[in-house]
Image (cartoon, rainbow, N blue to C red; front, side, top):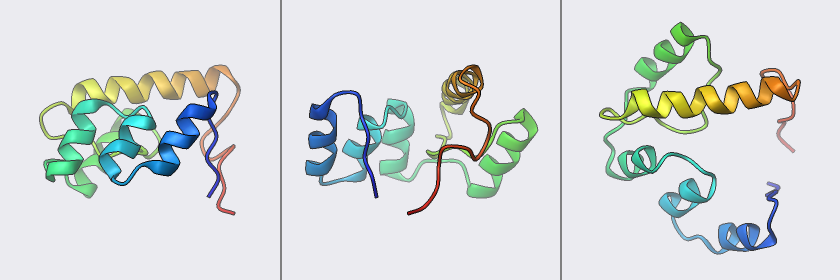
Length: 97
């Protein structure tokens, strides 16, 4: 796995992180989604998949919470729009090593 960040302090913090909650926040995932993942209060995998497909979005890198999925969906739209602005399409720029 490679970890890339604009600031070396973020890479160091990620490498020292002991739990998914800390890692999720470092990745910039919405706090509500991180808390829901930590407590297990997230949408079912199938429900999230169907919702994202209906919205025309690729798979999310985080689980949407049951209570705040609309706000979290707005974050995904912002990320997706940013990728499109840089000319990166779904699946580009990511690969397993």
